[in-house]
Image (cartoon, rainbow, N blue to C red; front, side):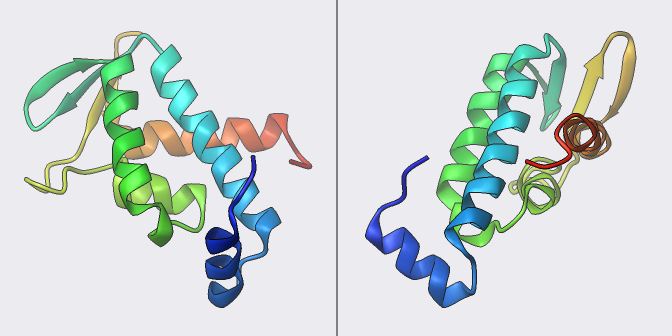
Length: 119
């Protein structure tokens, strides 16, 4: 992934190396693809959404607030777990199992790290 000069300057001011930005982006992209390809049902503010809609919504939130997100864990905890409007947690139903998106995405990230020990 390529970064423009303003992003690199901001990264250096925040103490982030470009490699750290790339790793965060890579992990967040993995999570967004994981959501989109999951076939799961997502509930946001008491409304059901398919996986592709959920991924589009979270991508838009990430693109809006990415300057505040330094890790994939922060993406999950700050953007992908609760509604900024209502404060309600996002819920995922997948394979007959219902859980919060926070739990579901942290499990996905653990799996990613196990399969990519030296990302």
